[in-house]
Amino acid sequence: MSDFYKTKVGIFLGSFDPFHVGHKEAVLEALGRGMDLVWVVPSVWNPWKDWQPVPIDERFWIAHYELEKIENARVLAVVTDPDPTDGKYYSVDQLRKIIRGYGSRCYEFWLIGGKDTTSTIEQWKEGGWILANFKILETYRPEAEQTDRTFISSTQVREWIKNREWSKLKGILCPKSIKYIKNHELYI
Image 1 (cartoon, helix red, strand yellow):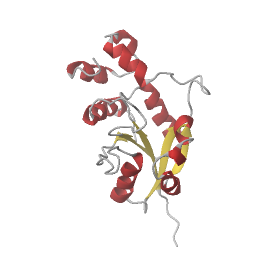
Image 2: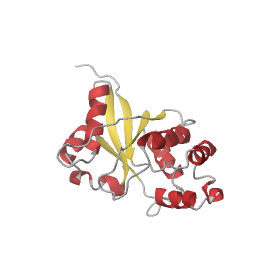
Image 3: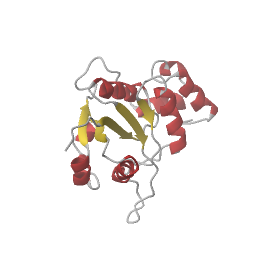
């Protein structure tokens, strides 16, 4: 059996509604902690949340603008059908599609998430399969552990956009994202 290097790919799943500087800092942290590539994968809809995010294509473009200057990070569109038993979308379906599409022969897949996410994977649909097929890279929650990280939530960002408090978004979203949000009248 030959030893060869597998590219370490961090998969960062989430609603990203919208993707912001806190998410970007997690991507940079993952790259700084040994990931060769980070793929940001917006979920179609998070079954744990009781609200519907803006359409996935809109969230895709915002994440793309936020990451376009970060080498080795990109947004990956992995759209799945809803589960026929309950009509919800699940991360395991996106993860299976990634493995089928890219294989694990040359890639070593890691799942990136904060402690709030990684501590609950066993409760996810097919959490055992996820843990058997993906290594975990736990990023930190800034409110609990890191003072050098930006503490911001997508909920707060949506509120500022809704109230048209554009000046508060400086440093939270890049200018291209803000322009895209304004042009498409998102979150208003």
